[in-house]
Image (cartoon, rainbow, N blue to C red; front, side):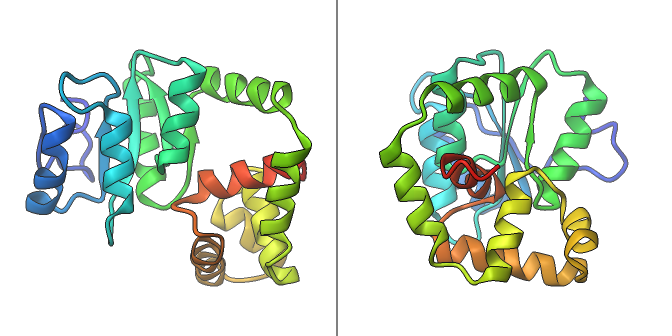
Length: 198
């Protein structure tokens, strides 16, 4: 009902369990998949990982009642572009779907606080060194774009800050994903945070 009420969004399919997601995505070709975590046979984390590993995968927005650290981090590392709680107001859910469809990342405020706490609490030289090594493979301009993504900037904000077009920013983000072997902007931001650069 929430999605159907938005004039620019359409529900093209549904799946009752994580093991039904691949077939539903092939049949319906959605731009964004809203994924729950707890399902009876295949959970949403495994379904997200499998889905995002496929070519031309849709974006995934996790919408769940569970905001445990383990779920948030696993969902983001599996390739989800966002993580919202089911008590998020309807207008914010619709806005989040639009952001994710546009290639942006989105996290509920509670999840953002948990993620920051986790990153601070679980620092570590090994993780930082690994992240710095990955970022060292980038050109100076790619690194500037990666750092801006790590600060949570939108494509439009990066374009303004770095004096380039939005299309050029999108091209740089795509290049970063390929070069760093990542699935989405959230993973770029996690890498930048792991390197203690944001």
